Length: 263
Image (cartoon, rainbow, N blue to C red; front, side, top):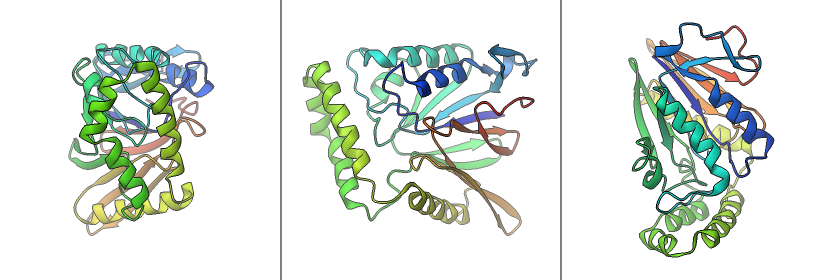
């Protein structure tokens, strides 16, 4: 089995460099059914990457609201890319982030992609994985947790169904900025908190915990009795262009552009 995990692209404008780089990356993902020659290139010098499942670990979009199939126009190119991936035979899954939620209305109902509102438990071969964006791990950040609860409440959902979409997108951009300001710690300290949480979950029986949110790419390996466990934060697609690749029981943290010779 082959799976790929990314998080924190914070897509906003299709003219942004990191948006364009992500589009190239997505174009290089191929279903394992059609990957007899994984080093064949499709975009410049980048090798094709055989994948069964693509997992997107939250904050893929810098904000998100849609209605009746209408989405923010700048998101149309990347949604078409994800649809093309699905049509190539790759299963696409989302974990909602602190910037993009209410995703199921569009991605599940219209596109048939799986959405985890917060936590997902996955099986990668025999590996039991806990997967989430990770924004609720810091239980002492009451300011953010209250904001999160408010934005995801039934009244907020009903209100966003009534507002004109252009106005709603402006409000979503403002709520995105508020969400960024609600983070209590530096990325480094937040990374420590996420990995501390992941280690506890590994000791409770998970084989791997995969999180986004902190924008720091880091993988830690633990030996617990006779088994190994992995705590992984995915980094981002703004500075690091990092992703996690799982292949037949092995996790590898990679960086786009460094994959030559890998499949």
